[in-house]
Amino acid sequence: MGQILHGMATTTIAVRKAIQESKESIKKLAERYNINHKTVLKWKKRDRVTDIKPGPKNAGSTVLTKEEEAIIVAFRKHTRLGLDDCLYSLINTIPNLKRSSLHRCFQRHGISRLPQLDQKKAKEKKKFKNYEPGYVHIDISQVYTEEGKLYLFVGIDRTTKYCYAKLYKDQRGPTATTFLKELIEKMPYKMNKILTDNGKQFVYTSSSYDNININDASDNKQKSPFTELCISNKIEHRQTLAYHPWTNGQVERINGTIKSATIKKYYYENHEKLQNHLNSFLNAYNYR
Image (cartoon, rainbow, N blue to C red; front, side, top):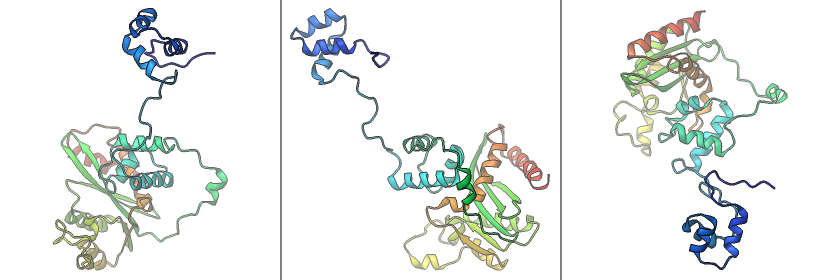
């Protein structure tokens, strides 16, 4: 019967067994089988003749907690997004997440390649509630050019899929409010609802943005400039549940579409070229 040995093995199972049963000295056994004396000593000490499986005995992440891995697995199964799209979507929820650790997490839980959905189950899947145009999903993700990092703000209507996006150098509260003002002007119809995550650029006041105390109830009673702008324009501001990023799946999907058409396909020397290409893509997406 064939033997499965690692590529650098210098002994066979029969030789290893003979070494363990022999009473000759380490030096004589090394000369007889033309191997290093350390190899002889190694097999003398072992009670088995098969190779030990490489890698850690208890596979687990040294970067991610069990709770964070549970979030990743649930997000992957609910959205069925690719590796990079999952990374961009979860980076704000799990700041220490890297592409390599995300990939290893997928492998550990057997979701590197998701099985195709059963057609019958797909038909039974609950559909989104129907809304009139004006329910907009908003999200932020990171993109890069040769000049450095940018933040991509994206808003997409839940019903018509009309999309508006713009690049900024930061993702602070005032920037989010500026984007909302532009979004209200660019949308071809009246906005009545907005869905965002619980990021402090959407929720907290500008005065407490840098020194916010999450446990202080008095801070949470104050409305953010972003929310106040929604109120002044008669727009309902909704937030996703904590640790449920898939709730905002509409905008997560368009984020992946935009990146596939821009940064994943082309190289940009500066921020201006990326913004110009982004504008061209949005014109084609919205009107053609």
